[in-house]
Image (cartoon, rainbow, N blue to C red):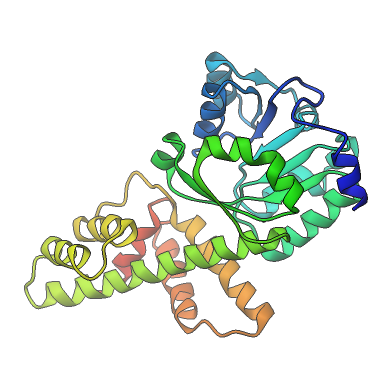
Length: 304
């Protein structure tokens, strides 16, 4: 409550101006998110470890931050980093929160563990900084279109405050609870189910090809009848065509998210038998040198 009392003194105007927002992390997803915020007319401040994406966004109308600490002077900060380690190093272990104005709200789009989410929430609250978890469903083209599904959790008042920005980057915001880890567990389970779908598609394609059925036709039949939707259609086509580049989501990142699901299951005493199989499949794919390919490449571990 003390954190919220401090937050109420700040609107979206904050230190850097009306509708100011910072975006930290300008990778494949962060860059289009920042670009869409610029296009929507917001005063966008950007920071990234490498300068190339920063220069590109500056040309589009964003302003550069010299450091994470400078970016954290904005009233709302969106970060789009890769994993627990990157989030911890950037925000929790760097001392930057102690230099962040009370009233700033940090929206973390990373897919992180529930443990990291709880730690981040506590650390931000200690310094009077709001914390919202908002991982997303959607690949780069969806981010470019501003049509992500945003999985958000945090204190209701904080969610209301950042909603105008989430409306720019996504087609829908799913409010999943007042504890940040609730959003992260939904993202983790979603990615876990995608991995399960990839494995089941690989097995189905393998069986059909063994019986002399064209894999492309198999995928078309299945996705036109029993399993419509982007996951089976998109990944089914990739598997049938053995098309794993360019990677929309790498095998290394897929294994990271699988392990998040397995760790969460262990914490709750829930077995994930298919997850244990997938652990082996992902490890084998990476050992075979396929870590940088799209995670659909785990299908190649299935004999065909």
